Amino acid sequence: MSVIEKRGSDLPVEISRPAATTQLAISTTQARISAATDAEAVAAWLAEYQESPQTWKSYRRETERLLLWLASRQLTLNGMDREALRQFEQFLSDPQPAERWVGPSRPRQHPQWRPFRGGLSPASRRQSLIILQGLFSWLVEAGWVGHNPFRLMRDKSRRLSNQAPGIERYLERPVWEWFWQWLNRPLGVEQSDRALYEHARRRFIFGFAYLLAPRVSEMAEARMGDFKMTEGRWWWDVVGKGSKIARVPLPEDMLMCLAAWRKVLKLDAKPAYQEQSPVIRALDGQRGIGHNQLYRLIRDTFNQAAEALEGEGGDPTYIAALRQATPHWLRHTSITHQAQSGISLRHLAESARHARLDTTSRYLHTEDHEWHREQQRHRLVP
DNA sequence: GGTTGATAATCCCCTTTACT
DNA sequence: AGTAAAGGGGATTATCAACC
Image (tube, rainbow, N blue to C red; front, side, top):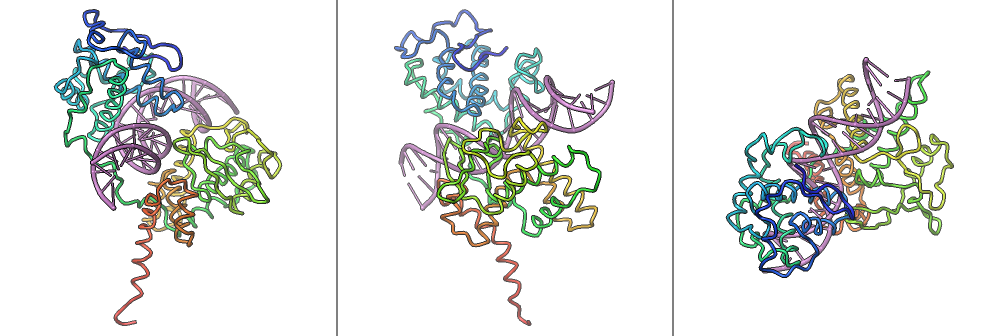
């Protein structure tokens, strides 16, 4: 059932297209791309995103759904009008017949694979429509379709705010401090090599995360040689979201964490020039690990810490926080604590690699807790 | 300076692979 | 065979950037 099979130069394979509608698309327009079918036109658009695998993946998903839906309605991209768009949006919220469109998560080639897990939430529908709007404006430019029906759409339902609510997802200082000392507890004697390795790896991952506030993928992608010394000072060169290159100062503690971790890996304390091996590694000590695995590792560690704190009869609020915590919390925690320790907003924005200062300043609001707590010292009767 | 559109990331569930 | 590690796919969320 799948329409677009592969990335790269291979053209997509089109499987179930009603013969009656072929070639309707180009009769009125002058195409500026070489495509024979809707699927090929879409593939040409997708090819623009080859360098961004995540984006490519989500855009393929959305466009594939549209193509499959069009085929089921005997429509083409060029035949898509405002009314068809309304029907498609309705379809996204509840794809029917379900046995044709909805199914469990399966590899794409699997016979049970279906385009949907279920109907899409309003937020996801908004996302889908935004992507398809981009597709259509490209296709108009390419001369493949006559107009962009999304231009006619002024539906409030897709104007859902994508502004995040206040950021509160971070660990307060006492929780972090307890957590870090828990992480550094010595293991008992007679531990397997593997247990020691995993213990060291965890310490490094959390130290890295807390000190430099990386995104998960930035950690997973990091190479040893990205830590560099110039003019006697150590920096971390990181390629962040949007392929943005940044250079972040390495705190002293980070160098210590790195040296300790490299010792476990049987490497010199300091990375060599252009050392290409991954920083965070799988159990074999060589391969890197994907962001997904890193995500799980962090999540599991937080959960184990929650168990441990519960065993100690710790504060239930803290236990709950640890249970909820995700890798993103580490980034928030790091930035928030840096703000609290007086690092200036401008430098903070720089090292967090936020393009806009107001993104960073949102983290300052989380100081409200502290503010509130301090305010309690102001009493009528001392 | 706020809104909205564009892009890419995070997070979760499930499957596959690798290792005793 | 049984278990944990790693990977795939997709929904949802965060951030960036262009536009009023």
